[in-house]
Length: 541
Image 1 (cartoon, one colour):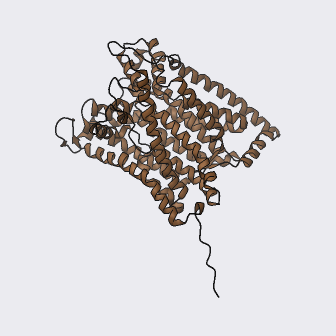
Image 2 (image 1 turned 45 degrees about the horizontal axis):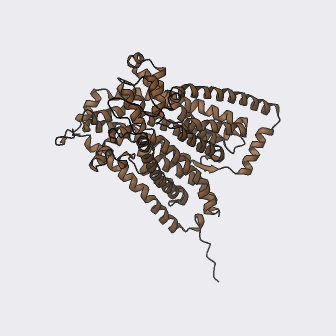
Image 3 (image 1 turned 90 degrees about the vertical axis):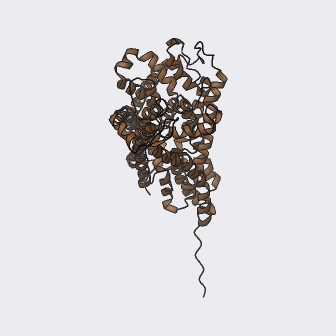
């Protein structure tokens, strides 16, 4: 008597395990190559260069640990400590104010929640730190105060520059932990995981701050040691040593965030429309006295918080907004800048970079989270990327500059593209998203409806935000651009440092032109209300 063989276990989309593993690793290859080229090799070269004396002119000499000794004698450890103090306001906003705002919005009901989401799109669409901080410095700070209290000024500028983006990202994340739940206490594990990731991210971002310190005097943060030592004092060894000291805590933060991600098994799911509608109806139709009183109090609190936040945003942005209709500054005897060229250098190279880095990240995220080549252990494939999860342009700027210089790309379109061929934070985000979408595909859903349709808006969202943030940065253009061909943020920094333009006449419109701001706002409001409102963050399982 013959016994029928058990049916083969079928992977997502009908793919066998061999095909899943093969396709998964093939799709992950671009991200791995980008990791090696953009992060691993520059890190190794930075460590080597930190033990040398290199002034870009004479021969390179080995000096052992001398560069580190000089940095310690100059007080770099204290500079790290002062920089961490700058995180207090952003952390308070992310871990105290944002969850409270999210709770009020979720308790009040669907319409209030969506209105809150639309409001959260404003600071992201208007992310232009140079314009915001320059306007603030001109109108809200006295010149004597900047020199008399440099660290207080830096803390103020850091808070102003980060508040809007931090609040928007954190509140959106906490809202996602509450979606699709009948009892909000069930959201606590996911909310704690999100809080941990926000903590690590804010610490890492503040350690790499550059724009705000550039607008203050007599303050040294980790990145000023890297950039100023290497390219102003022509001390590449000293700058590289500072970069290594910065890379160490960033790597630890990245590893800690990855460990939290792996331990919590965090994922992003789409909320079932029927269940979501039932929850919303339950929230708004529960007629018990306690429920009605809770909704009323939450609604009042949300209105007060919303009015306050709108007022603060307008007050903070007004010095920029009132200068936003002027686009260029004339500083004799320098030629008047070409507005079209300035806008092209600001937005086109960063657009190309965003398209490349996000595409590679999306493919890698689908390979790990969607195809799951290692089964339930697939997220372990994120470990090679973990040390560089929070590493931006700054710590590896010296090697990126030398690579660009040796390729003859300084001052060119290619040179204006930010270094880095994959966005590692986006890779992690897409992995978490595809991990949450994969069960429906595995259960027999079509690939397009189960994976492509729910993920495509996230690709657009991450691409737009990456483009917007990259276009607003100063560090890489400061290294790779050549006058007079500068992108708008760097041009504004240069103009304000000349001290030859009256404060009321400084043009800030080219940093984020009004038509682009409105376009970004329309896209982000639509994504917040129609897409992000259907996503839920879950942990464990």
